[in-house]
Image (cartoon, rainbow, N blue to C red):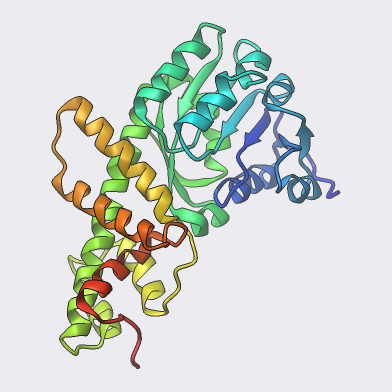
Length: 304
């Protein structure tokens, strides 16, 4: 086990050591916090080797920590870990903070927060953007909902994982912001895909098209992150199609609740569903270009 000098007295629990959660928890640990993870996680041994402690279940983890971060696939998993039998709510003491960094429905965040508040437990909904590379670098963007005083107390630990941590309102606002983010990302990838497939079909080198437009108004973080991977035919998941489908499902559910038509989002959702049907659900969301390639009967790749 790596011996690490503890800098901070706040004890942090971390539940959800997947593609995003594992590097995020490592960055909290590297910053000098005492971190506890679930011993049942497949990645627990790797975190223990880096200096983390373990707990048998969410209740036990909550009993020995001051802040619990969850990074889980969707609303049902978050609800179960926090409110279910043997969950965080059973072990957390008053004044504990749950920071849910998963991307879930805003209404679910509000419902969970209300139940936690009855036990004197605070909550922030704090979904992230940036994918695996930025999770590893510790340069994620974090969008936070919750009380200002709770945000201020937990800002330092969130900052260990992120370049940007912004409170956008009360509980649920973080996930509303993340839904807005996922709309923009999805439609950007779709637009990039249309453009590069058009260029390729018209006989113009797509790499040169990308280089020509990236510095102008069409340039974006999404374009720079995804175009090079598409051109190299790299579709290993940084963010899976299945997860983006989950997020867009939450987007459309929320939009229907508040009465906001989202025709472009709905169209991209159906494209992703088609890719899932074709067996690409576990591929990166940059695979959206394959939907257009199939229609145009061409493959976008580097030619020089």
